[in-house]
Image (cartoon, rainbow, N blue to C red):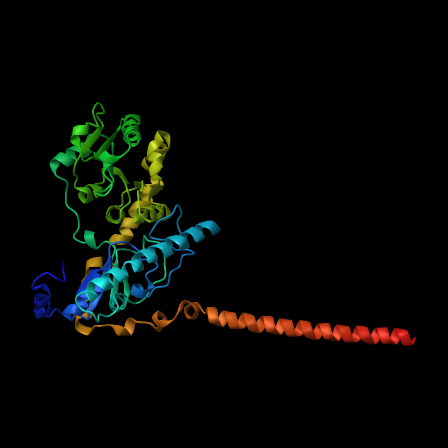
Length: 407
């Protein structure tokens, strides 16, 4: 629909843009920019890590210690089987992405029979921006073209809570905010999960629970004075209020980043995709605890974890230390993004950042051919030595037998 929209391509050509940037979610970006003649472009990614996409990032996959974005019940310290499962997830994610390329190729070729390969077009990006911050993400291989801009959405700072919200945070000594984002709706939870949250509020009568719940008509908070439901909340402003004690979250990239910058301890219940990986990063950084979503069906497990985050000062201390580091960085994510795009517009395309490794096959890249030759040479030497020793042994044995016969 985009490329066939009347007059759109002509309008984009007439604008004569200096540079462009866009999501790497699919292969349309490269083809569209090729059609309008924009060669200076960058790719952006809303997640922290795009594993298995070497053609775009020119960064090798390190499945042995970098958790896949597809998620698994582990962090960067993996057992033998976990590393195998992590490699499987990485390959499946790559297959999912590369597998859609032929559809986009066919789409462009329906209008232009001779059209360049869409993967090659996307690989011509000069910069690759990731929604990640090395201070809180898992350490991983990188490349000069790959730039972390995690926190760009919070670069504008936060505001002060309005009186209605401020009054709620004044109700009790501690306050817990619970939100599972926009993708996982609270009202769609199994009833046993909702009961766990209701029972937990009763177990902590001195704690105010603010629950983002999308259907007021369900009356889920009825009869529980310290459980307050809302269809919306000023999340980032609330996270920065020192009266907020714990943030219970699904651990989406946006919510996790906001909490990291605010310095609030976390109890995370990931639901799907990158949220599981984010949850183990939270655990690794010591700023909270992570639970499996099935733990919402185990009231005692959920309550004990919440009590630990509420009462153990180490989580608040580490959360504040992490926030201090992030807020004291010499350059904001917004500055990094803007300056790099300005540089790309002025001096791009930045082919200087391409390395020759992108043209090597897997055997050349990982030196499998070299290792194979060395193994063959080593085996040949060992075989030769063994053969010589065997012949010498037979020779000496024969001489000894001859000598004994003569005697």
